[in-house]
Length: 209
Image 1 (tube, rainbow, N blue to C red):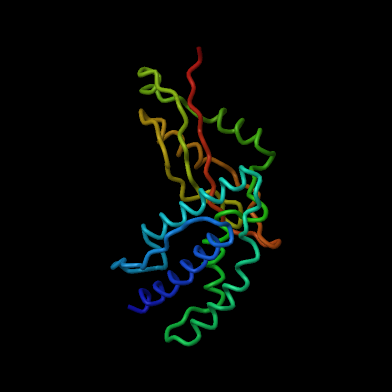
Image 2: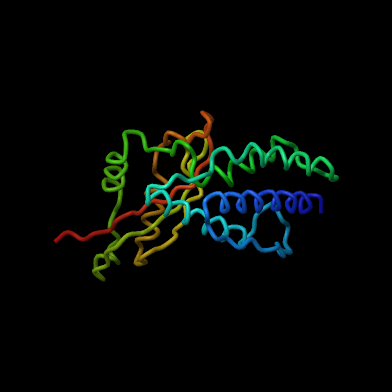
C-alpha cells in the first residue's frame, strides 16, 4: 500500500507538470482525475495517453518553428512538489522526484537530443546494412515503414523498443531486431546533464525494382 500511495503522489506531480507545459505552450489538454485501481507506480495507460498527446503537440510546434516551452518549468515544479510532499506521510525523497521529472519532462524534448554516433546518415546506413527483408513480406509484395519507439538511456544504451505502427509480414519483428543491435548513442542532455529520452524512428522496407 505504501508503494501505491507514493505512486499516487508521483502521479499528481506529473499531472501538474503536463498541465503547466500545456498551458505554457497554448495546448488544449484535458487532465482527468486518476481512477486507476492497480498498484500505482506513478503512471498508467491514461497517463501515458496524456504524455503521448502532449508530446505530439510539442513536436508540431517545433515543426512550425515555434519554441517549445519545456526547459525551465521543472525548477518551480520541483520546489512546489517538495513542499507539498514534505507535509505527507511516506513522502518521496527529492532525488526520486527529480528522477521521475526527468523521465516525464525531459523524455519529451530535452535541450540536446540524443544522436547516433556518426550522425543521421550513419544511422540509416546501419539500418540499411542490418535489415533482412522478411521472405514473407517479399512474397506478398509488402512495402512501407515500421515506426519503432525506444528509449536512449543516460549512458546511451538503446532499450524498451516497441512498434508504434507496423506493416506486418515479419517486418515489425525485423525492425525491433535491428533496433536491438544498435550500439550506444550519444545521450540527450538537459542543463548539461545526461537524461533518458524517448525516441521514435521509422524503419523503411522497400523492395528492389
